[in-house]
Length: 102
Image 1: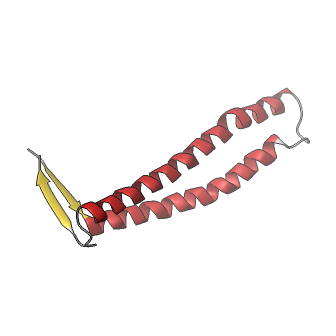
Image 2 (image 1 turned 135 degrees about the vertical axis):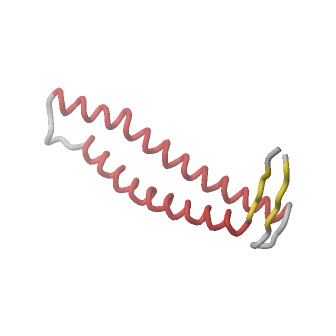
Image 3 (image 1 turned 180 degrees about the vertical axis):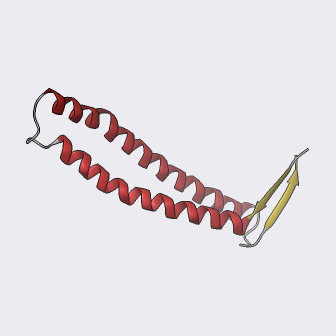
């Protein structure tokens, strides 16, 4: 048997700490996206190596950055939904602690 504990204040604090990291990453990702786009659209670098590098950034790195930022935004939404659901369905006290065994 194991125990599960839902400590609302700790979960809220954890989600808030996560959100701070997410927001920092998302802010940096905006700058990174602009840098990627500037690199891809830079006509001063030409030739096979430049074209291959630009293709890699365009085809791999930009889509990866978009996927990561989308995933972070979805995670933020899920965390908000978890807290809202718990508050509305279980206990609305910010200091609630729920323990159960499984």
